[in-house]
Length: 271
Image (cartoon, rainbow, N blue to C red; front, top):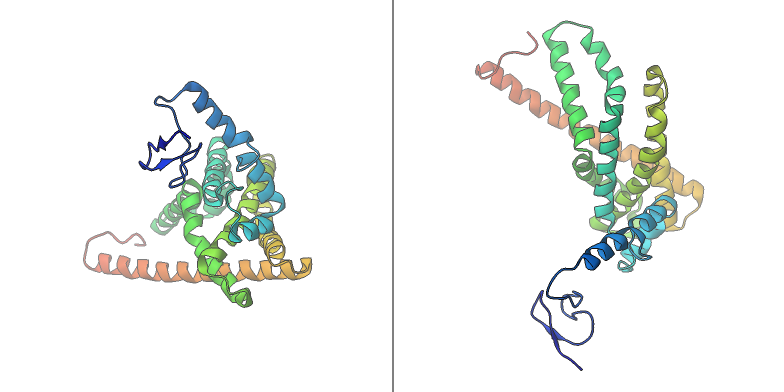
């Protein structure tokens, strides 16, 4: 049998794939056929396709998380890559349709009607939060997901899941949530009157709780009611942790701001 030297790691092997790094035996030059095959493979291949994984993430997020943690990972598109890709699509849709402006218009309308430095400061703060939670939504969620993973550790203590495993479960819940949000909720919000946006956007909180509940129910194979209850508790606990972190950060921010004002480094924005 012909011996092949892997162009990626230099290992000698037989067959079509390197037994050291897993790379497929490739030609000396990249061909158009290979490029096209890889593009089609990503979207249509039975294993690890984006569309196939999107369907699984929507209908069976907990089952996917269970199988993935059991070691059956080759068959699935990478959940973290999918999450980042999905949130990127969400940000793109929000930006192109200007729906992000519509959502935040109500939050900023009160402060914009008052002419004061405090109102201007508040408006700038809301613009910063808009930038953080919309433009950099993927990074923001990746940073806040650990709080929900910590909360899940309290609720599923008997499962003895480590932090990384709980993080993946929460990510699968968020994958389901963002599929619903991006392709159903946000498009509907684009067509409703602006005065309904605040009430309508509160539905997203309910959907998030349901997604966590469904994911936990499928992962633990408990009853639907128990899963939904745990999902609601998980979201509440994660939200409380997020609020606590925000409060601590705000306290630190204002301490630094007061010191900066006292030292004359910045002007008092509330004067």
